[in-house]
Length: 207
Image 1 (cartoon, rainbow, N blue to C red):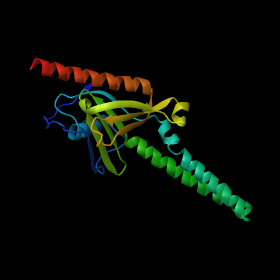
Image 2: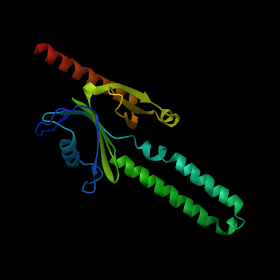
Image 3: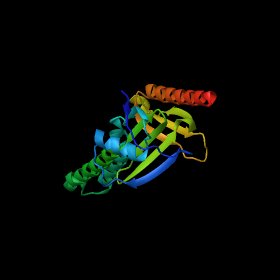
């Protein structure tokens, strides 16, 4: 379902942009009012239509924490093998390991809550940041490629990350991380890019 937001027209974008602002006043998790206000303030032009607004899969919380949790377990086991008093204090070690692992999962959950991926009829946007808000937005006419990148973990859970490459190679690429149904998401992005370029070409031809 598409959603339309209205605001005063902005100056045309000349390139893909990254920006960062304080997010202390924002409410999480994202609500419709916050989404509308945030996008209208940072990205959307008058009449711009949102075709897709998604977040990473919930598996992001676990998968992004696996290496850290595994390292924590390895360290705990190593300490257990070295410390001759481990049998007396084993509960403290495992409680500490569980506390650290829980902290990492909490941080991953906050990261998941802060991420939002948006496709409009004019641009592609990534919003993220726990303590500060980072916004990447690139006009569709300036997107060179959108590729699916899959790690082994993502393949197992049927996820994928969208790698967005701007036409201007001096601009850093961006990613939509660990999205569900990546092939469908990529197809929708590519279709939006083609539609936008066709409509822009028709406008120039008519002129």
